[in-house]
Amino acid sequence: MHIQTATQAMRALKRFSNPARAKASVWFFKTGKGEYGEGDRFIGITVPSQRKVARMFRELPLPEVRRLLMCPVHEFRLTALFILVDQFRRATSADRRVIVDLYLKHTRWINNWDLVDSSAPYILGVFLLDESRVVLYRLAKSRNLWERRIAMLATSAFIDQKDFRDTLKMAKLLLNDKHDLIHKAVGWMLREVGNRDRKAEEKFLKKYASRMPRTMLRYAIEKFEPSRRAKYLSLRD
Image (cartoon, rainbow, N blue to C red; front, side):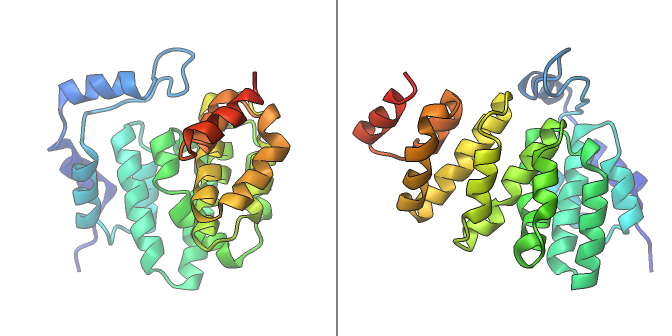
């Protein structure tokens, strides 16, 4: 049986590279000095093309997925995460634990919002449906922005099961976070709670809206009717 390698996956990905798209991605993902994606490298591959390559390499051995995930090129890392999500979905319980361990040991390479959002709910979140969620609270207190976002986004899997407890605890824990990308993540997850149970979201908002960063609040109430949105926004004025 032919064993696939990370080098082969990189070669396949490079066939889809586009310099003009790469230049746009460098701007879009804020890679300038002092920005959240500082120093990240792009070669300009669309997400559908990355998913196509991920399907071609769905049996890539885990050590090779790890190699791909540790690459400096952003699209290589995202493709590695697409492969991991697919392998996790098909894995036995024991193999799922191995994938989660790899994921948690390599968070320094899961270092932009698309990388987090494409993986945290579907790997860590799903795994923790029936496991202790203590790890989320460690991540939420991390100095690493992306680990904090991973913690928040992982709760999306719980929301899908109409289990809002950890989402609301996490939102409270991150209320005073300084970063805009955490404000957006918390607001987004609160909105997802509200999409399933408006009363649960509003109970949280009535208690904390006046303390929430404005971006967080705006994301949380995006689906509310205008008069109700105005009411909550007035609490921040």
